[in-house]
Amino acid sequence: MHRSPEMTALGAFRDGVGRVNRAPAVLLGVWLMTAIAVLPTALAQTANPSPRPTFPVMRGDIGDRWLRELDRYTGDPAVDLGLTLGAALRHPVKFTSNLTAWMTVESRSAAFLILWLFVAGGTIDRYARDRATRSHGFFAACGVFFFRFLRLGLVMAAALVVVSRYLQQSVVSSVALACCRVVFDYAQVRAVVEDRRSMLGALRAALSFIRRNWMTAIVLYAVDYAVFAALVGLYVSVGPGSATIVWSMWGVILLNQGYVLGRLWVTLVFWSSEAALFQGRLAHAGYVARRMPSWPDSPAAEAIQP
Image (tube, rainbow, N blue to C red):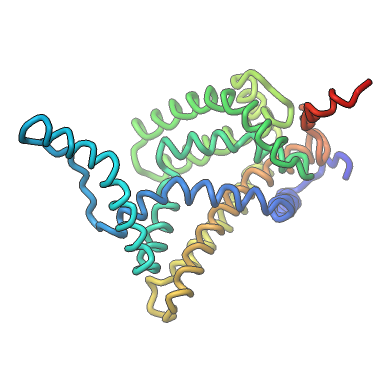
């Protein structure tokens, strides 16, 4: 596909959907990352609906306190893990419901945003190239752009603080947050596609691209967000909390995790469709300035050289 200055918002959306669907390993990877990040919390909540960790004050002589502290380090964790795993096996629906809830809520935590900053470089690089990069290429891009995106994240955090501090909760606040997201998304896309090292330069380039293509960028964001809203509406209408359908145990489990996968899929479509729009307007499909890293030769190759 050659450079197409007339790339439309719907065309970019269709292209973005195709790129995400052609890379199922990325979707599976971010789902696994999300599940592992919240698994301990979901297990603990299943075993104890109101977990409240405390640090005990130990009394007694030194020997008794020493033995009890050793037991807390060696025996107690194993017992606690057994209890939490047992609770999850006895109540699979409750466990998966807790897991689903935390997987959807965790996206707002600072720790999880850092994980997303790490995988963002490899994810956008994979979608921009629209061809397999393998694990070494994916994680090489993650490593290259992680610290660059950390710097960008500081600017993004400052902008979000200003919006939340001065605009509070209102329609204006929602519009401002959406504008911030669009700008920072295109800054990430331009940083990856053009291999930019300056994040302030990437922000200026993103603003310049949006200014020249503001109508298409707005329509594309609206289409992406409409798909997300439709997914949420469908889940609320027919999900386990509704009275329209009675779900079996396995139906609830599959529905909950299908909803999480759908949310992650839409998140990835935002990136991929924006990359498709940028490449369609200013470059060409598959163009990435950074050279694809190649897997290093095996050390054994030197042994067989004359």
